[in-house]
Amino acid sequence: MGKPAAAFTSTATMHGGQESTLLTMLIPLMHHGMVLVGIPFTEAALNTTRSGGTPYGASHVAGAQDDPAPSEEEKQLARALGRRLAETARKLQS
Image (tube, rainbow, N blue to C red; front, side, top):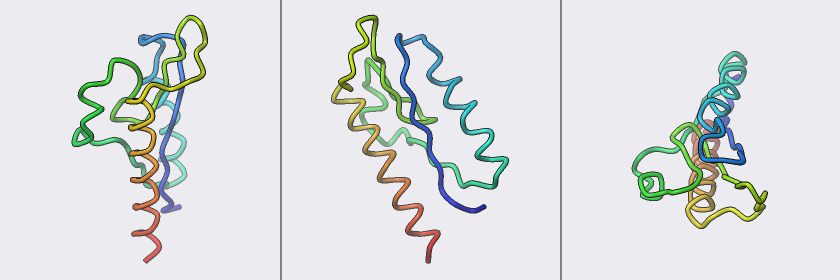
């Protein structure tokens, strides 16, 4: 209880349910009293991404060819979410 949490996901298409998957993953975390961390719109890549990334968490669009490599924007957003998670953990520890 009171620990920070974030969600990451991957889908095959842009409309493969990224946001609904992330939201569904966050509900049990709330049930356990976790402090949820998302990606704010102050992250520039969130406003320009043509692939993965939502305010609810980081995501990757693997595409029809199952491309395992995240785009640069997906990497930026995943790192931003990881930083927010670590910073929140540090603040909650104090």
